[in-house]
Length: 321
Image (cartoon, rainbow, N blue to C red):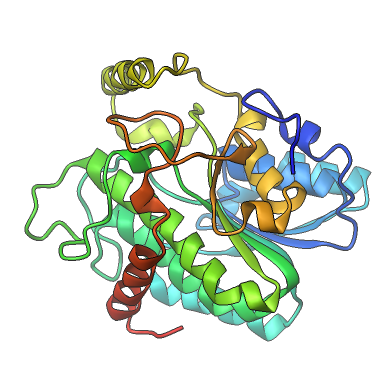
C-alpha cells in the first residue's frame, strides 16, 4: 500500500477520507501535547474516544478542544484516570474498563515521560522503563480482550530507541550508572518490541499492533532537561543524519507529530503496518548505522528479542498474559 503522506502531513490530512463513526478508541496521555491532538483528530472524524490521564483536572482543562470537536460533530469524548507509574492504579483502570464491557477498535499508548532524573515508580521500577513500558505492558494486556476483531494497538516509540537497546539483566539501573537518555532509549525500544510481540500473539484473532515514532515535537516532555542539553542532542542527531545521507533534523508541529499515530491506527493497512515500526506515515527501514536518525534498529524489531522482553515484563510485574 502506498500513500502520499510524509513528514509534514497532519492528523486531519491523514484522516480526511477516513470515517470513524461507530469506532471506539482509547488514547493514553491526553493531558497535553500529542495525546490531546490525537484525541481531537479522532473525535473530529467521528470516533468515540476515551482519554486516559494521571491528572484528571489537568486533562479536563487540556481537552477543551476535544470536547468542542465532539459537540460540533458525531464523535464523543470521556476521561478515565490512569497513572502508569502505579500498577495498582493501572490494574484498577483496566478493571473499570473491563467491567464496563464496551469494546475498543483502537488503543493508542501515547503517554510517557522523557529524560527524567533518576527515580522510581510506586512499584520500585526505574521511572522511564516502569512508566513507558511496564505501565503500558500491564494496561494493554489487561484490556486486550476488549479489542474487537480488526482492532489495532499503537505503541508510541521514539527515534531515541537508537540510543539504547533494552537491558534485560539490569532494567532498573541497579548495577549500571544512570543516564537519563540511555534510560529513555531503553524504554522506547521496549515499547517497539511490545508491539512486535503483541502483534504476533493477537494477529490470528484479527488484532494487529504497530510501533510509531512521532518525530521531534516541542511538548511538555522536554521539561526535565535544560535547553543546552537538547541543543547538544540535536547537534549529535544532525551529525548522524548527515553520515547516513539524511537531511537535517527539524521539529514537527503537534498536528504533524500526531499524524503517524492516527495513520497507523486508522489509515494504514493491517498487513502493511502490523508488527512494524513506522515514522512519517510510512513503515521505516532497518538502519543500524551509528547515531540517531531515520529508520529503525534491528534490535527494536527482532521477534526473539521481543519474546524475551515480554517474559521479563511478566516476571517483573508478577503476571502472565
